[in-house]
Length: 181
Image (cartoon, rainbow, N blue to C red):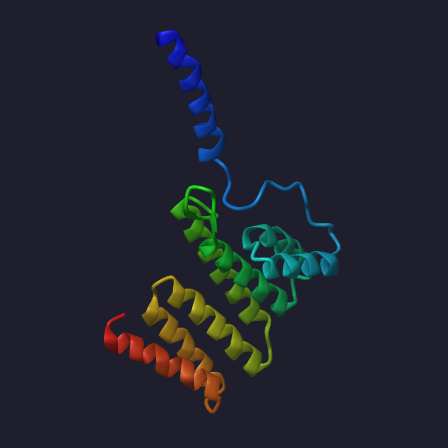
């Protein structure tokens, strides 16, 4: 009787190993950045639109490294890094983060903030800078740092004090802080 159970257990274990460790919602890829900044950026945007934020990071990073003085690319890389940190998918066993380890998700979020800061250093137009401060505020807010998000929104408001969008963001964050969120 024991001999009959063993092949079944071996098969069940094999399925558990094969499917229990499967990546979330996308197969491994061998696709790599081309080294051509415009092409890599276009591919990254395409992957973002498909919801493949983790996969898009390498392409945005390649474009940002090649065009290191372009603030907009750094902002897009920051968005991709943040989106990768919160990307979820269905693995067949339930919804899971695409990046499984919390410390890896935290690293992605921190890398996103570094890229936003780099973009802010490069940007010269106050309205562009204000928009970047709002991206920074959103990353912080979604990460649970509402007070820090509010401080970033203050920086945006200082740059464009009459901008209705920035005023609305600041008011919304103030309301969250008053409510204790």
